Length: 309
Image (cartoon, rainbow, N blue to C red; front, side):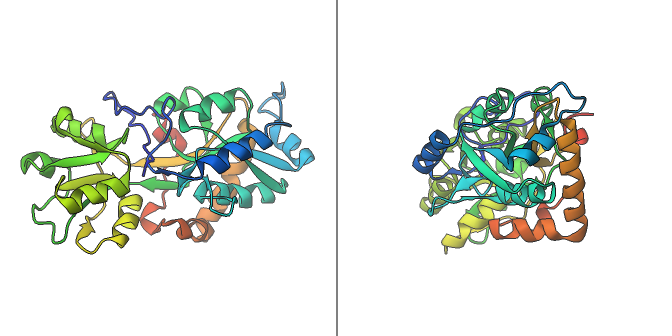
């Protein structure tokens, strides 16, 4: 959820450019632990190579560890209460790198807006933070194919009394609309015709749930995954069916993936080979399911499609 996330790939600003903001679309977790781990492990980052396609994979095999840039977002990549690295992206990276001959992964915590700059400056080897793929980011890094897709959903009062199922409904019913700080849903609502100045901005999905429960808002918009999880704690709200927001007049689906430095195509390609095997076998869903992902979040989207190519 935060995933604040994930900046929309079109022109309307959502106050949270994924390459310049601190978070994405979900709760930030373990900030203190992240800082400590980051300070403890900033050495031995593999350096650039002149080999065509890059030789980073060979160097990671030799050193036995891949360093993952994470942003402390549940459920994408974070340090848990026991101080352990987890999340959908780190757990998936751990499996894939082991199959590529790299035995360990280590976290390098940073703010979300520092992930791409940190990757470019070789502070870590790969971004493992569930980052949305969009054309702006594709000009700076290369992506694996997405390991998940994400639709939107609303938190509403039980029974959905206003009949709110998409952003056009929110506008037509003149509903009191809320979403999170920097969320892409800001831009989705504005594109549908909702006045930006009338949007209630809250810190995260938990605050959004509270806003609906107390009547400060009729609806809170977030990702299908995070809204689905947060309403489990509520007896008087529900989540609507997931839907595709409209972007530039067309239904839009976001996809999250791993990011690599542009010259490291050999590593990206090897990573993709293993990822596609896991998609085909169903193993990918088994790894992501503990973090709230379902069959609805599985995808055949490609990085090329989301990059605009």
